[in-house]
Length: 77
Image (cartoon, rainbow, N blue to C red; front, side, top):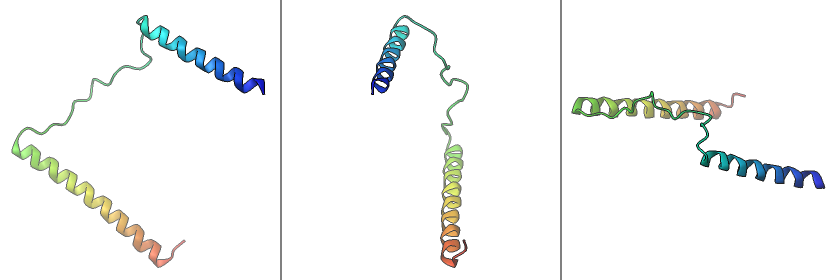
């Protein structure tokens, strides 16, 4: 019964130690994502292309859902 309690205490201690390191300016383990640019359409053409791509993806999802329903109704297993 003493072991889970010890594990919890060690976990709390490690979290506290990590916070102390962060306050001292320690380096992050992973870098913030900075190389991927956001896709923000600016012109009317870009906005239309974006809406078309979203509509295509929704259609693909709807078709896949319908195909799955038809497959289940036929009773294949």
